[in-house]
Length: 251
Length: 95
Image (cartoon, rainbow over all chains, first blue to last red; front, top):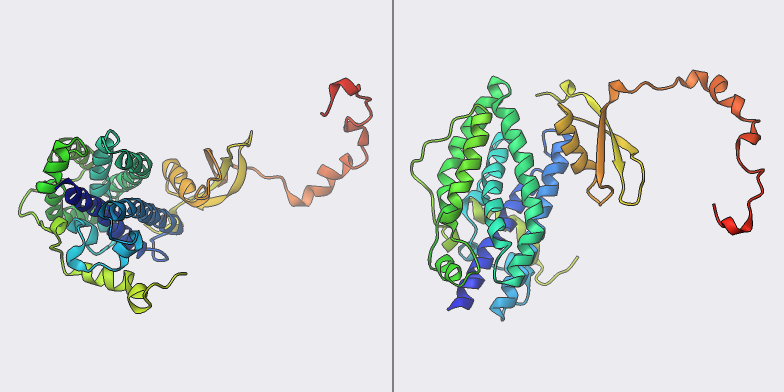
């Protein structure tokens, strides 16, 4: 039924933004320099804002869920539908930047198509979010270039980061019944259709940064259906603590 | 990459209503591109501006505070430099 698919898809989008935002927010106060600290915190807040839009719409579509907060703070690990790449630990700054670049390049391609969605609400969310995503891509791409084409140390670190994160890129371009049904209704693109442009952006950037494209090997999968790494539970325990300990509290 | 090796930049922002760029502060960045991005992130978070200029701090030559008297005091008694002695016809309205 299309309503179930739409609800699921909205969760997938909202959870990607929510979990990545929560992850990046961990850098707040710990950034390598003041300027980057603020840049990352801005990015984290962009994602929380996007998550709010997606999850509010999800709650509306589902009907019986109270609101976005309910979805964010009262679901357990298996009910989260984010891709695993968004929950990976921040690692060093190179890893955070590599993840940001890989994900932003994907998100820009996705939102680009969602701008023409037949669903007005999704269209609106895409129009607002794509400006943020384009900046995230610009910012992280610049840093990939700086690190890749920088010192031996920075080059090695960003190369290792890309290698480590590569196994999480496959999942981004998977589709299941949810995407297939909504795609048929003209609401969304298939994720696999975004790959060609994405890999182009990644290849160009890595080449300019004197970095090697990691070889495709085993790919992780399962986040979109609730099968997560051991890291998501830890994120939730911190993010949801207040609502779990003091249900319904506001501040 | 130590922060000590990044030069200082002065940041100028033009607000939506503003006609000119105004100095808002300074920041560290490795080059001009990074300085613009950092300025965007540090100084335009609350919709302060629609245009950014960055200038290497070392490119700015400042007047010396020690020369305050000889530079500025002579203007003190030159009230005639303010165009306040003209009679403006009422048709002109507010200027």
